[in-house]
Image (cartoon, rainbow, N blue to C red; front, side):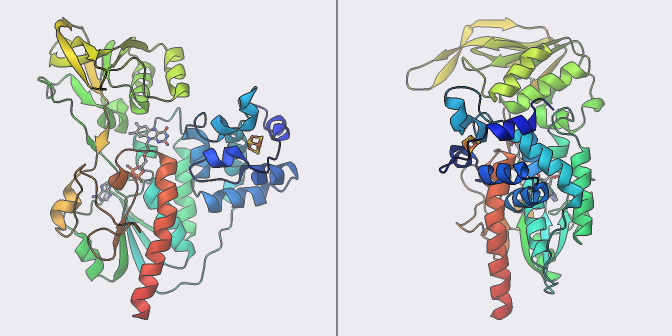
Length: 408
Ligand SMILES: Cc1cc2nc3c(=O)[nH]c(=O)nc-3n(C[C@H](O)[C@H](O)[C@H](O)COP(=O)(O)OP(=O)(O)OC[C@H]3O[C@@H](n4cnc5c(N)ncnc54)[C@H](O)[C@@H]3O)c2cc1C
Ligand code: SF4
């Protein structure tokens, strides 16, 4: 543990208007959790964390704390903020197996959840606790979505997700692995089979393309595909990474851990988009950065890189006169993802918006009655805590919808 959590808890001022809570996207009651912890009521603190954020243990490891709870802590104005993430991690992790979640008596209704990422897991846990019989479908063999098949093990141990899978089994949640909805089975098939409502939390798994020549060559890989199973790739010694968000940091740091020696990230702007922590850790790992540079085409030798000219109106363009061939064994493209379209192609009542995300109303209902959605498939690529926060609300909306159907 990087900080002594009891000392950290003792540093909390128990603010009446806690700025940390305001900075937390899911509004965790941080001073109250810390108070309970200090009074040795650690299980109470764990329940408070879990009921507010079923993925608390995950968020304690992968949230951008410097911008959220810790970044807002009053202590940080003149010194070091209280490192709440370390306290949260200790509580949520050490109490997880002992949590006995209250489950309402079975209400006789079934709901289907498509996608076992943060959004789908939140819906499944919340609706199961309300007495629904839940089946979760996922194309992958295990639960977690990006948590398991994107974020590397050195940032988020996969064993945490195995523990969630066990906890969900205990709650009576059924899991159908290796099964894509939108292929042989449509959402309408689920509704026809008696599921009262269907939730779509299929995320954003279609890599955004650069749209430059050479992108289909055998030395080019997309971040989301590479991180799915890095062991399946032989990147070589010299790797170029195009893009500079958190996923790009994961790609670069994973490549280094798999033996690549020279990993260069080409950053279109003057600074990276990744969080400060992820950027600094990439530097520590030996990742190199080239700023105001972008790829204009790709050859068998590597990317051809140009200077980027930034204009005052915020637009930018490549200065082709500076084009230079860089030598790289592999090029990894990491410029975000958008949702895949298999569900929309199969169930025509579902609509996408102009940005290619699933269209939903204010209560998360899609254009197909009884079918709800949230997470990256609705917002585009965002964060774990954003997916959980909105999904908590959607679970309430699905509950209200299903109850109204029965009463009607
Ligand atoms: C490399 C990377 C690193 C990231 N790091 C962080 C981080 O450090 N902190 C942070 O907060 N956020 C991070 N994010 C973003 C975060 O992981 C996502 O915002 C979050 O996982 C979105 O949750 P979701 O449930 O909407 O989708 P996902 O996690 O994408 O889960 C969707 C699930 O749906 C399944 N699925 C898709 N289509 C179908 C289908 N047709 N039928 C059945 N199942 C289907 C998929 O297999 C997947 O399991 C990162 C993203 C990436 C790509
Ligand atoms: S802002 Fe900092 S000091 Fe105040 S309650 Fe939150 S963690 Fe404690």
